[in-house]
Length: 246
Ligand code: APR
Image 1 (cartoon, rainbow, N blue to C red):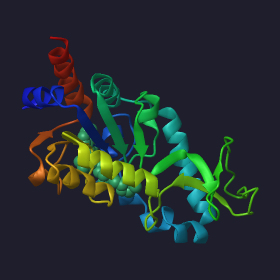
Image 2 (cartoon, rainbow, N blue to C red):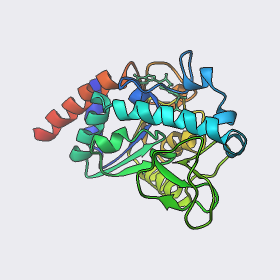
Image 3 (tube, rainbow, N blue to C red):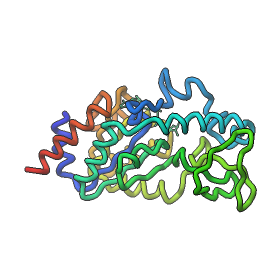
Image 4 (cartoon, rainbow, N blue to C red):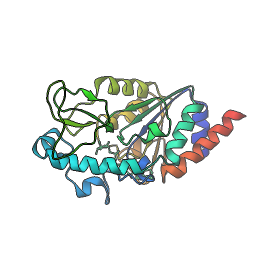
């Protein structure tokens, strides 16, 4: 199956990859769902929502500081690197990620759409002005926006919030034009990201899912490769590289 996927990918001009928390699992970043997932120990609505932030501002910032400290210790794994190599081999490539850990950027993938934002970036909770300078947030003394006085928050999309219109529109266009669509390490349950694989498939793309477990998407996939993305992706990309060099 790996050989077949590599053969198809090496003949495709438009390649789109969608990633979720699973691709960062081998870097030591906890995923959200499943027995050891983040949401097994914390309530998303309390920590990753506007209401939660307004009600428990200090706790929310303590939690994000904890996650930021974790992110500073992790680095891209072979799965992230393989995606960067695939981009180098592809005439037209788009990476759409739900992850906020920034590991695809550190792995030097170029064309990235960070649908859910980036945990290391800050913005105003009222006017959404991005706060450029690196801020260390003291949860007991949260900085406020220089423009409107609103409390500063992490620049990531919380439950119930709309995604950046331009980002999701671009992601949909890329998915519609994909000839092959890789869906990697996502439970495919959070929309609108979860609708992208079906959009690609409906438009004729070959749908490849790489996951340690079956998901709601698996029945739609043309190819389902069960296993760790950090092991499977390098294998596929190595074969694509060989086919391209012939
Ligand atoms: N390789 C491939 N897949 C893996 C690996 C791995 N090494 N480890 C875990 N997985 C799979 C799991 O089987 C699961 O299907 O990764 C998926 C992770 O799913 P979630 O934890 O639900 O993460 P994700 O799909 O990215 O969540 C989407 O939900 O909480 C919100 O905004 C948050 O972006 C996140 C969104």
